[in-house]
Amino acid sequence: MAAVETGASERRLIRLTRKLSGRLSELRESVCEADGVPLSTDGTCKVCGRSRVPEPEVELERVHDGEPTEQERLQQKFRQRYAALLHERELEAQARAKAAEPVKLPKSRGERASEFLRGGQLVVRGD
Image (cartoon, rainbow, N blue to C red; front, side, top):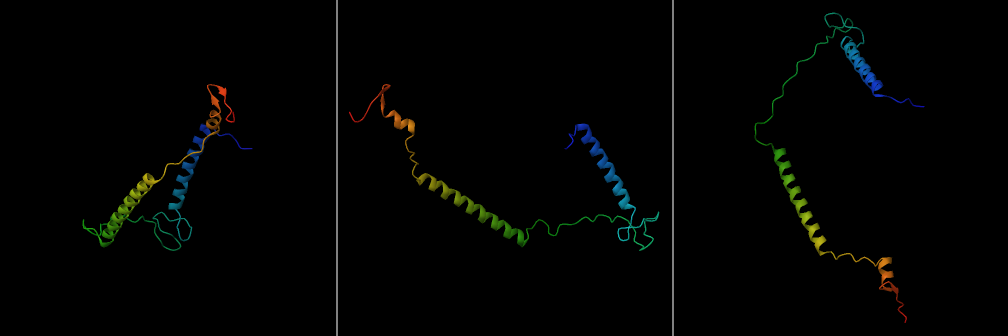
């Protein structure tokens, strides 16, 4: 049988999970990725000599300046053709909807029964 969790128990679980993830990240930073042995105080591995120094983030420059590339021009042409195609299909669908005959529904049971009543009196057609 499953236990019913309250808001307090959910908050406790979240707090414990955050603590655990913090401890795991500290442990990961203090262990060599290749060998799994603890790093020395200067951040190098005693076994393989790797150092755990974060690499600086490299800022990427744009490949081109303002001018669209050939691929971007082709994509733009495709989008224009596709938009025109969708517009054409929408117009065709609207034309088909206007040209279609309205649906003629069969008479309901109530309408058929009301044909035999005139002024609340039953009228028989054979008389």
